[in-house]
Length: 133
Figure 1: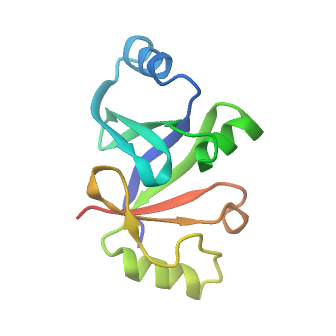
Figure 2: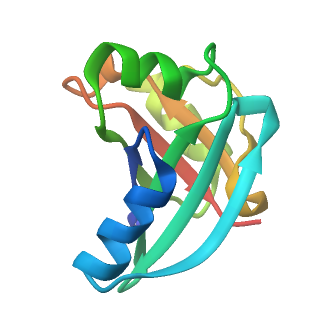
């Protein structure tokens, strides 16, 4: 059901520093920037091949990304996999015994349908499934 890695989510304390590191240091280019108020995060996507690196910076102290940074510091927050049908992917994951954070898709950056799978089901890695709308 998974078709490719859509993006790697990287939590950062300082978004502008993160952009500098990935643009100047690694030669990637910003392709999208968006604030997701409901998730308490600003996302910046930097293109690499068919995938992206997604920098995540919290906009409030109670957001999941803020809690991640407080507990673990900057680093890889999640791996996102592209799927052709997110509802079917969630059903397959549920049937396989995976613990879902999102029982139904919600809207993420760029208007894409997203859902998260709990890291306890995926060997400690927060996983996201993504379907373009």
